[in-house]
Image (cartoon, one colour):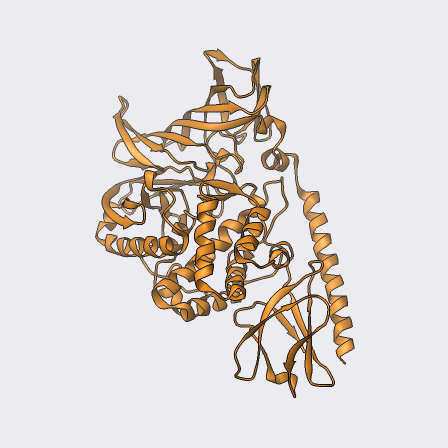
Length: 552
């Protein structure tokens, strides 16, 4: 019977591999030239390093129309006379200007190719300005689809926001639209009709009254920022400010809420202060002290716009009043404040170079929810929340997407990713060390772009464990490993892992009866472990903290 199960597991594994391989081939066939132009770092994109943008736009709300410019200040990485920037082709490139001269350009899908009159030499600091206009794509279900969210508040006043993660910032403004190149600093100037204001990232440095019943708001960002984080938020806002006593000193907290909701501000204040306290404990100082921390009320549910977190959870705990984990612990805090603020560390400070590794952002941020619970309610509550989140895991596709085509992996990157990190914490079995790893990670990769190997190698080095195959199985394959256990004639126990990752090995905690948990290193080959049982039912496997299958 045991041999039958082994054969069955092998056949099931082969079928799973064939299905995954077929799905990958099918996905590759669906990638278009537009996907490659957006997702691939060609020499026309790597030849220049963005250092500064000045985005200067006017928003005509009645016409749902944009017009303006963006200054690209860059450093030449190589000698070049041609480069690519990005802007969706429904928007018009009106002019590209270089030192007073209008440059020729061509367009292919959402990529724009600019030709310079002379070669720009390596290491030179230079700039050009793109003038553009048009009607940007309207989001029908922000933030899950990208573009402009054109709404009105209950008083009929305009309430407008941008959200473009995944789809890309070039859906509404011209830029080098690839996550690997974060601009060092930025000025965001947005003109809006009088009667409403614009809130963007960073700090408000100037308000300028214009002649045509418009007001321009100038926001300065002094830290590196990814393109998809750059945001416009237009509304009839009330502004409340307070100070958080953080690890690096006083941190300004700004709340921009609709005037009609000003009396609900206490809910945000409580959640923001508690979130910053918990996350500075686990991850280290808030990464953008210089730009401050803001919560900005939006009609859509929320987004991690750096230093200007979009909030639309309607001043209630849970995720729109629900706890997806079913544990009850998700109803103790406002999901959007906690989750989107967690992205300030994972996503905004530590950023994936390719959207294929978006799992880095979402897995750690999902796990940050559990760590928030841990900080205020204890580890047992935290683990109950993580365990409950398994109910939403689909195991439909790998967490990691294909590189170079602007595609992310499975939505399991949230819940399954959080479960993965809780497993690693369990494997390390030293909570002080685990906290130290998370804080060191944020220090080591502070304001940097990273990839899969960066994260895996760092965790391996700091934990002292070889977790490469663990990450490989849970991130690069869709299925979970199965622990096969058998009892030998003398009562000893033999185990092995069945998994897709070649030479898979992973620690596991086992116990006999009510005995203490013991961690064993198990490979994909049967090995005898120093435990004896009369019945296999007496052997307990920690399936509460390990998301695995068990075959006895």
